[in-house]
Image (cartoon, rainbow, N blue to C red; front, side, top):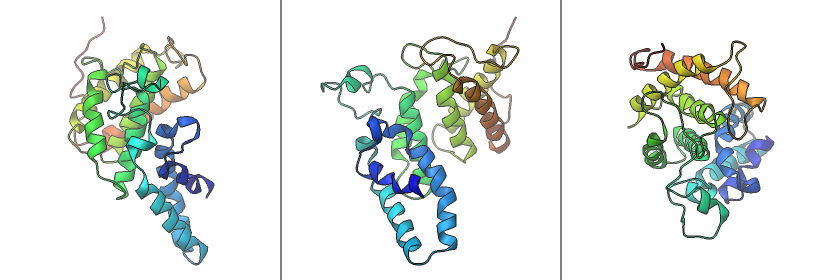
Amino acid sequence: YAPMERCQQLAYAQGADKHGDFFTFPAMQAYNVLRKLVTATAVGDDESRLSRWDEHLRLMDPVKCYQSHLHNDPTTETEWTKIYSAAKMNNWNIVNVAGEYFRHLEGFCSIDYVEEHLAAQLPNFTENEGLYIDPHGPMPYDHFPRIFLATMLHRDYKGKHAEALGTLLERSAWLSLLMQSPTGESPVGGRSSMHQWNDANNWLTHKEQINMVISSPFPPCKHTTFSVS
């Protein structure tokens, strides 16, 4: 139960090393599994434990918990807001948006933060290829945020930006298959390149894309318009 007990850090905006942006998404996956175990034996300490988890997840304020969001003040003197102000949304924000979406699914928050930030993120995708351009264009951080968006679509995100995201993710999935090496290695370039998780990302991106296509109301291959000569 330790992962859920540590959600208190998020509730009070005390995420380790100021990396709270990354914690909500896995915490919500853990919550979905662990609450079933707690509910099955909901007596004494288990009842209070589940209530405590719910309280912490409900108390979270994304503007305070996360570093990357539209409400950062770029005039402050912190290193983060100088580099990644509202004008430079990055992959961190997509991770925290996915976490907020799963909080929304469990009834802990509205979907407003999700919709607002997805609208701001759409211009960071290349229109024809659907590739995500993180600041300075590192290749690993094209795949990385797409995993979280595909997971949202697989888990029934049907909000304002669902069709646009479905289009972009389908295009980028096809292109990524063409960009990988004959042995399935991800293309390199920029920070975090050649880290072992790059190739795991490559696999997971396509796994989630398959899940998304299976569950999506939008027909597969409908939007793929680029060609290779």
